[in-house]
Image 1 (spheres, rainbow, N blue to C red):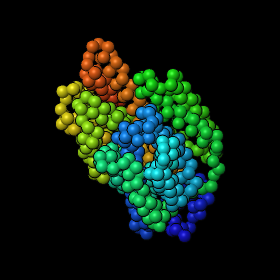
Image 2 (spheres, one colour):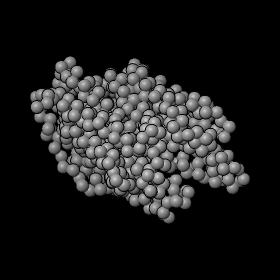
Image 3 (cartoon, rainbow, N blue to C red):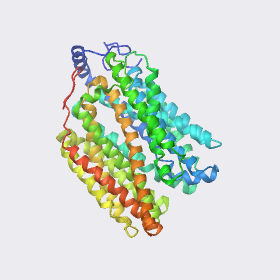
Image 4 (tube, rainbow, N blue to C red):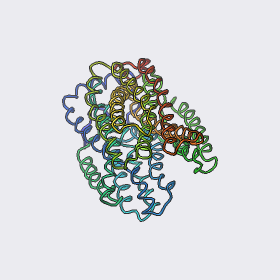
Length: 509
């Protein structure tokens, strides 16, 4: 039997606590903190390592797309599904994790997530064709979708409020470094080996994390028995899945390669599904049975922080898509050189995470968010000047400054958002944050690609060369991002350090 944080409480079937019982439970948890501190820290480090491994695969396929088109004899549109399908699966599964993390303990959820990821990795490594490879990516994404909310919920549950910034800074390493080095690693692998080795080399690491986690991860969260609402699951799948899929078709719609009307149909289905999903949750949460409890938004601080996340994630993912296009199609760099050029920024963002976390614990969010948002805006405005004569060193410096500025944004936003809600809503808040990341990333990608394509077409019609026209489109994409970034500067002044919110209280700060 694993040791629980509060041994005298029945954590497998406890109802949602009242304010008075919550106070007693909180006191009991704090009384046991010295005894369980080492165990909790070990669990968090194991979850961090496992999440790093699974998040590495979110961006590893981009550079491999041209190779897969040739090796598997498929179209470029089909090959893109290896990335789109991964993102789509994440958007569908993450909203369900709010329920799963309340229903099942930490250890079984970890084993499930890493088992799914390992199985998907093995399937992709031996895939005889595109269909099996896509299935492997979907299974991988299912495990990945569970890991981040599991990590965030566990961290919020076992770490004292005064130390959350420091620990959340370590989470930012996972969120930024893993996706950033994914393209570089895949570029190095593809320079010497087959695309299969992107999965072959990851598989033993994933299996090792599974074995270590199965032995060492302990149950540190409370759970309660509750039925799952099947209708909510269906509405969530249609809503978030339809929205992300529709946004992924925007580039094809602009280029004329997507099926006629498919984008608008998907976006319409997504919008209707989300509206119905929200209404369903509002009804179910009256009986504490919501799949994704929206009472988290009663906290103004949570709402503002999530709104800022939307702007920042859209800017980040849009830039991640557009900068490689600029470097390769306008400046003529090879894919591996592109990956290496963008690597320092991703490493800087991640390595700054713990430092930013300690600064958050000491000074709160606003002294970090305001300069961070100004830095993001300054870089995006600077990138509106790029052309075919731009130096790669300017791009390198801009990307590093953007990454550093984002490092000053993400840790304070995550910590402030989740710290502003009641502990019983941590799993739901983590699921909302994860869902927002996926949807905002897809929206940012769609927005930047649409503006780029439109600007490129207009410049070409005006007589510009192919390279100059693409540079003009990229300038306009960054211009839209720069304008959006001004909203983040304003919003940064409204995020406050959260109090330690007790059960039954609705933080309005």
